[in-house]
Amino acid sequence: MRYIPLSIVCMIFLFACAGKDKITVDKTPPAPPILTPHLGDLGDPAIETYQNLIPTDENNGIDAVPDGDWLRISWSHLLDTDLDYIKIFRFDDSPNDPIHLTALIDSIQYNPSEDFYIDSNAALQTNIRYSYYIEAVDNAGNSALSDTVSYSLLSKQILTYPQINSNVNPNNVAFGWQKSGFVSKFRLLVFNENHDYLWQNDIQVTTEGDFFEVVWPNNPPQQYTGKIYWRVDAFDWDSELNMLIGSESNESIAYLSSK
Image (tube, rainbow, N blue to C red; front, side, top):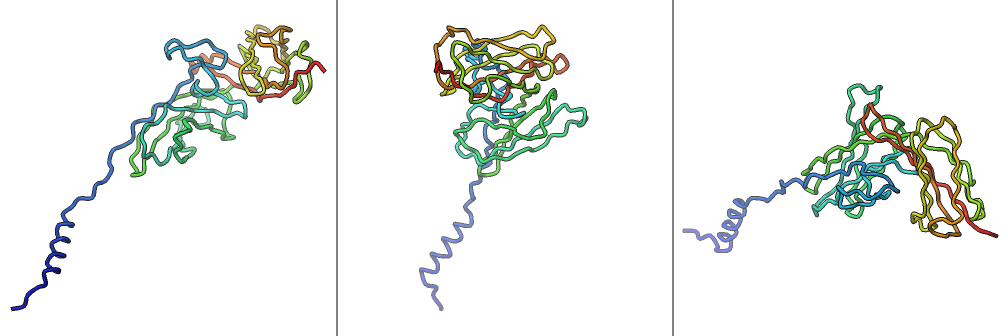
C-alpha cells in the first residue's frame, strides 16, 4: 500500500477550499451627480433660496465665461472616493438638429478638487439652448447619471475704450463698448489687480444705439489706483426658451494712474 505524503494532502485541501471562495466584485454605483442650474450672476443680490448665496463667477452654476463663446457647468462636490472619470454629454435645440441628438463631448479624469467643466467647443452658437448632463464612473466601471442643466449664449459685447493696457487718470475714467446683438440689460464690472470685485454699473437698454459709455465716479465705492480688469455682461429674457440668456465679454486691462 502506497502512502501519500502529508504535505501533498494539505496542498490538495487548501486548493479545494480556495476554489470555493467567491471573488468580491464592486457592484455599487456612485451617488448620482447633481449639476448646478444657473443661479444668477456676479453683481446680483444674495439668493435667499440658496442660503443667501451671493453669486460669483465660480458658484453660480451653468454660465457663460469671458474667454470665448463657451459655457461652464459645475456640480455639487462628489463624495465617492473611488471615482475614475467623468463623461460630459450635451444636446441642443438647434433647428439644424431637429431630433436633438445627445453627444458625448468629453471624458475627463476625475479630479476631486475640480467640480466644473468648461465646454470650449468652437461649434457653440448664440441664441441656442444647450443642455448638459454628466456620468460619473468609478474604478470598477459602475456609473451614475446626473440631472440636466441648460443655458443659452448671447453675442459678446465689443469693448472699445480704455484701450487694452492703456494708462488712465483715475479721476477721468470712462468705459465704452459697442453693442452686439439684441440686449435688454448691460452690466459693467470692474475688478482690481487680484481680480477682486470693485464696482459695477447696470444699464437697462431702452434705446437703439450701438455705442454705450459709463463713467466711473470720481469717488467710487473703493478708491483705487493700479491695474484693473473690466468686462461687460449682457442679458436678455428669451420667451421662447423661457429662460435668461447671457454673455460675458472678453476682459480688458487698464492702469489707473494720476502720473
